[in-house]
Image (tube, rainbow, N blue to C red; front, side, top):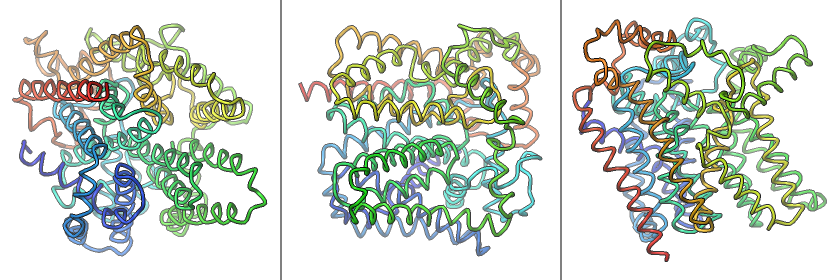
Length: 565
């Protein structure tokens, strides 16, 4: 799998994942960037629905070619609307920024020879097994990784990934590539949120913030489903805010449908569904005696339920109530009593808010003889598991300042509503995790919140003083070095090649943690060829390309600021 295959596959994935629904979305009376987001939402749902029918009806995989053929024909027949959309400068900015973010993450993926980082293991080949299960119509009593039943995870991302692979190549490298492309789409709704609260410069700036965010890049290049769920979750937030600004019922329906899609992608969207539903009810309290509000609410609820029924209806028929709802780790790993579970949740909240270097932790978890491996895991645990540092080592402070400043200019009632929503999201996002984790669990449910925070930072950039901007730049540089360059230097084994060239492969592997060793052994035992294996002799070229992509992103951000000024 080399350059031509990579670019061809990425292009095809984007055409299907974003362009399939364009002929429908182009008819909406929305602005261009919002149509682009809506097309991505509806396209991914369309891919899921069609591939789900292929699975349910046991149709051959060749039927999935209907998706790219339909997407290409639809885009061709809608070329006038595409040209009209492209004339919009904001659409061009958004498309350009999205492509840069996607290319950036694909470039880092090309350096990954073996997954490692903290305690991350198992999920990457578990989701691979799930993807193949739907493509090959595996037995329903299967246990992924030997212990995980099918219903413990929702299927949307696995099914969509499988459908994309089916029209390129069904191998592990394309599985990684498709997963990364889908993950990077989380930038789209975040950019719309940034544009909502800021100016035109926010899109290009947000691309840079995403590119230097360890939370985002590390998750985009790890083969699991959290970022695709964040895409739908952030899109639902956008539609919820839009519904509050218009009397049209469509925004509320889009919010409900998108929330349902998020839940079908990863159950980490559950806290956001609860908070948005509560906010919807509170916001509509003054209209509770108005028939239009009830019709709007009922329509949104019905459409969201219909989307969820595609999976849960089948699962209930196949596995029953217990097999459908009681297999997720949020249920299976709970404490034996309510009091004990509240204690676990409280401690998890504390440990997700207090950085690990300010308290006592089990440092044996990351013990290893590799010095760069140890520091990588030290920073990895900080950026992924601590809520504040997930935003960035300096960005979190500036975001707090921005929120306080914005709160002072907001009416008291609205300010209290935002505080309640954010607090509930944090508490629920951490509290729904059943097991105890002394390092923190920010990465499980709070990624959408982190990405939304970066969007807010990009939106408010022009209002920040020079000192705050310099602090963000300095912090972002540190985040890049410690959270991205160091991380991929380990996953590519380049640091070992440069600093310990005389060691054997066995000695190199033994210098890392048992979890890192487990990931590589799983790769070897599964005989999986990683995406990065195809580029193993071209690391210098990849690093040069990454430098050019970052330079382009910085140039675009600077140029947009100059144009506005």
